[in-house]
Image (cartoon, rainbow, N blue to C red; front, side, top):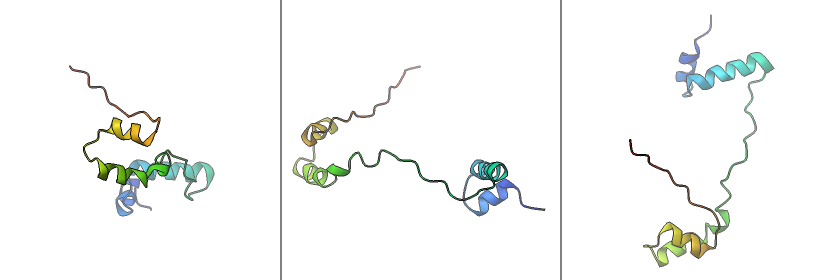
Length: 85
């Protein structure tokens, strides 16, 4: 008999949940090949990767808002709200 999902997951350094989903996909579709990666937002800053270091070196005490203005980007900063209990 085969190993459990937890044992196989530990052996291959993946989570047990990922292993269970892989087993489910194999059972339902008979495939275990890696799926195509989804597109992400990693390329948003790509045009600025050469400008950013020189801008930071020129004025290292700039805030993120000032850097955003200097680079001419229109991206908003991600913020988290903290709600006091």
